[in-house]
Image (tube, rainbow, N blue to C red; front, side, top):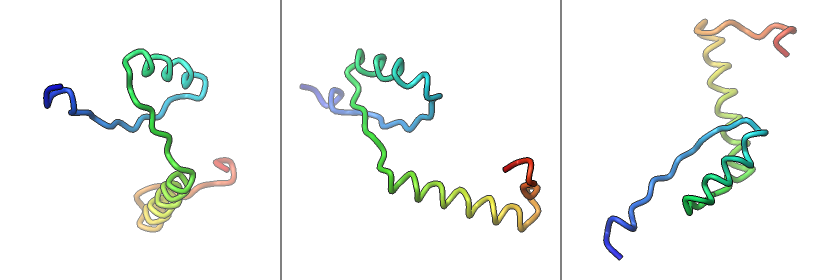
Length: 70
């Protein structure tokens, strides 16, 4: 096995729920390793995004949410 065989790239992607199974099949065909993200990390990412949006609203970078947005 050469050094080039050991080099891998990790990608994080988002796909529509109805495309997930198709994408998993494609990844399986190219012998890719699927790494599931943890629920904790998803929660932390959501909190981080929410804090960023709150900060942007406070600074006027984005408009505050209205009731129709919720």
